[in-house]
Image 1 (tube, rainbow, N blue to C red):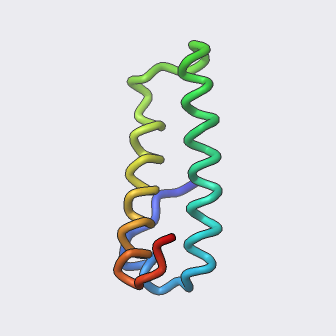
Image 2: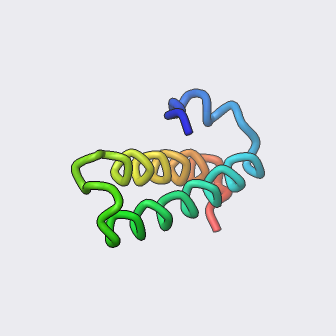
Length: 68
């Protein structure tokens, strides 16, 4: 998934952001399992990229007052 800027996230509805958050958390779990099995290297940066995207979405949801 391409990286999304916070300004673009702020334009989206809370439901869309929650759906995106669900997808990213699934992607993060998949990447962590691949890393544990040795399929990808930790240095690839994909895990940290997804973690930052999750944090970015959570920040926007918190600003909107929609955090679970």
